[in-house]
Length: 240
Picture 1 (tube, rainbow, N blue to C red):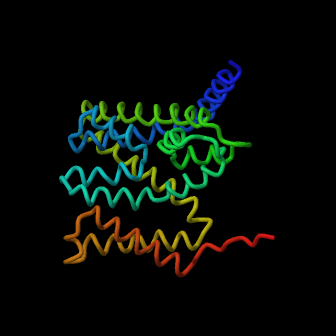
Picture 2 (cartoon, rainbow, N blue to C red):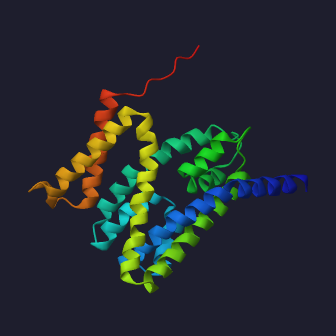
Picture 3 (cartoon, rainbow, N blue to C red):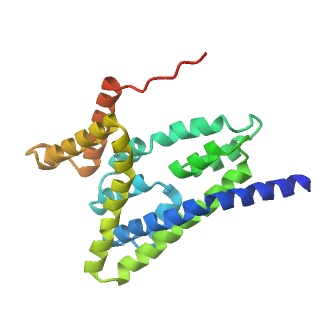
């Protein structure tokens, strides 16, 4: 009985910590829902995509591939490259879990590893318990799916001109994410500028523009990341 009460408290604590994430996800996923409606996805399809993926960058990048009936291979490789960071986050989180936590719980926690959930989990004092993570995931994913549903419905009933204006929220979101960090790091600014330059080259160059947008993102991401890793590698802190 005491164990069940403790687990419930962990779950409730996780839900409470996830409220800010939930509210933020509603705003971002609303934009995704609108874009999904623009390419002809139903509300159910958009909601299912958000429920099964829970990755903003991955979902937004996948829309163009889906819209032009791109190959599954292109879509899979694109998602692998964009979401590769979650493997590192999952590895880090596993260090906070007790070694006795079964694999089933570890798989459940891995479903909801996003940038925001990872940040809250890492800064939590003490070990990480599955029920706390489930509370984080349940509340956050609810906001992500709920916002998607609202956006998809809005995209089907609002005038096209208004939908186009709301679609600009996506670009504003990514700019808001990038600008603060680029002001602090010249290396990151150089990486962003190089990615923009390469994207322009692949978009307008006579032969390169024939490459699909999905593979353009893959190529640009790998090239820029590789060059940045060679020119400006992250220095490990010295340990005593």
